[in-house]
Length: 258
Picture 1 (cartoon, helix red, strand yellow):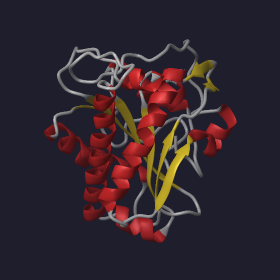
Picture 2 (tube, helix red, strand yellow; picture 1 turned 45 degrees about the vertical axis):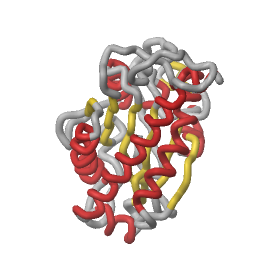
Picture 3 (tube, rainbow, N blue to C red; picture 1 turned 135 degrees about the vertical axis):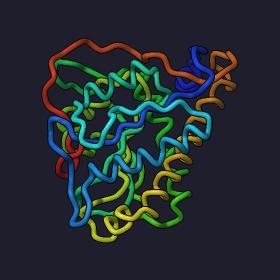
């Protein structure tokens, strides 16, 4: 009931749902992972640019956390951009460097601490956890076996999340946040797929399907018992608060993702 109420929180300030796209890297931890043909930085940016018009055509307002492929942004600032936009969902796009292959969706399952700040709030964690499996299922159904399914995972399974409880970008987020490892760029088959225009288009279409499913879940929540009962676009106001801290480290999965 509580999660339904959280997911149904309405602001009514905008007629459109807001999605914040966060193409990973560069950040203070580096430029991301690399394969033999392409880099995480390049692919994440290209997929974001393909995904943006799909979302806009679907009736979403889209906010990007950077304006060019090589623009350096801290994870803290990326989260702040999503917060300032009062995004219904912050979607972080990355590629992994690991022994596995395939696509995985991560969400903050517990409170973490970074740069003297503790977060995300319980409301953000519950909302993110509720959206993650719905989003992931739709993404994998759209891909139709083009990539292996690595499942839905909590951020504690990442290198940095295991150390600080959650990833830095999530710790500073006041809106629901999901991080997608779209493929394992160090895996030859995965890299071959994401290096092509067709593969990037397929990923963009799949991510659009995931966003549609996740935010449809939010809208449905507004009609469930215990929800606010207000009509309109489901929106998340800043869910919980965090204290200010200084800018320092960022996140890493297998090698350098944030």
